[in-house]
Image 1 (tube, rainbow, N blue to C red):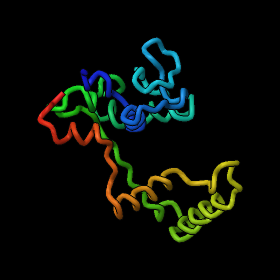
Image 2 (image 1 turned 90 degrees about the vertical axis):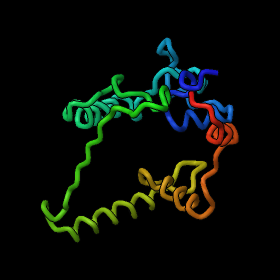
Image 3 (image 1 turned 135 degrees about the vertical axis):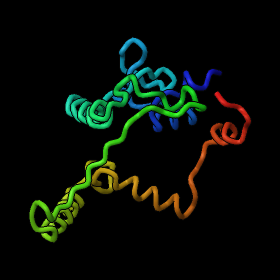
Image 4 (image 1 turned 120 degrees about the vertical axis):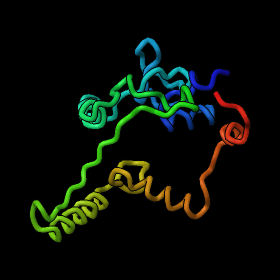
Length: 165
């Protein structure tokens, strides 16, 4: 098996591959540009939130790539193709001090109120709660800190091997 060709994109897709499970057909397309639910057929990821997500992705690519004179889009080196080579990609960090724009206490209160109002929304059928972006991951991170991070056997075996793909 040529590891780098099969494991190209997306942590959740890697997870689905390791568990031999399908993915939602809204996540990725195959080599023909058709939606796929088969994680082994993924050739490219679809943007989250459709056209709006595509626009946000371009903004991030411009700020973290082009603005810094670094690779963008398909020119960013793969995370999985050559594990002995450093990746060429940029990062762009923005730090905003709310006090420069107004009352910091009011800002923090409004954000807290926003989260409370979001939690008060009646969740859709089959869900217990409405979450803000990243909230589920925060809970998972706490669980991992307490119990450790589960690693699929296939990945564990690869990590302890001498193989470099």
